[in-house]
Image (tube, rainbow, N blue to C red; front, side, top):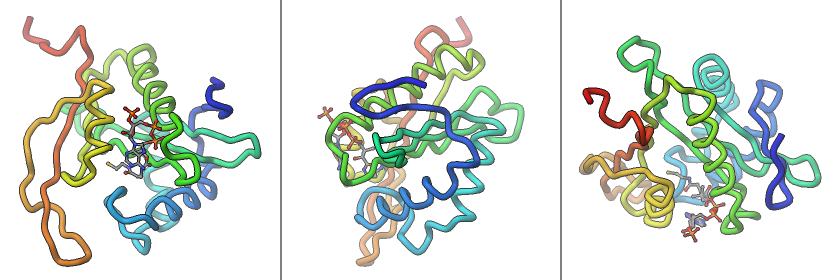
Length: 180
Ligand SMILES: CC(C)(COP(=O)(O)OP(=O)(O)OC[C@H]1O[C@@H](n2cnc3c(N)ncnc32)[C@H](O)[C@@H]1OP(=O)(O)O)[C@@H](O)C(=O)NCCC(=O)NCCS
């Protein structure tokens, strides 16, 4: 377990279901961050991604001094061979009460460091963020993710407006070009 910013970081387990579910419900209550609306955050959704993460991915939780999960990050490989070097759909959520205090950067840096050292077969990590989530996009770029285009009008907002989704990827520095 790694300790930073008065929080402990550890790999997520299926026993974290209740804590991660509660976290995602709280984070989704603020529009413009997570893609899912509050009613789309279900125990089944969380259980499914925890299982996928444990089976073929990597995920961490951040625990505060009271034992509460205040942040979570996860990503997992698609189930077919040609994408077995990829972690997709990375999702990160930090409890609003501790947002802006470095927890997101700490847990995400730990995630990428773990990919680098513990998952040598992974050379690509993918995420998608909506165009208007500018702080999150800048955050991901600061961690080494590159924008890979623009999925125009992919996101339907609750007010009926459409906006672009921005696909981004982190490439393992020493294997970014496997042809060489
Ligand atoms: C985006 C998020 C993961 C960042 O984690 P955080 O702990 O708040 O961020 P940190 O304090 O580690 O700061 C990292 C960067 O995130 C950005 N950030 C901070 N608070 C943020 C917020 N509420 N929303 C979006 N970005 C934020 C800052 O620009 C910061 O950059 P800096 O270090 O150059 O100042 C977190 O705010 C969050 O969960 N937001 C809601 C859900 C969401 O948007 N998820 C991502 C969907 S693609």
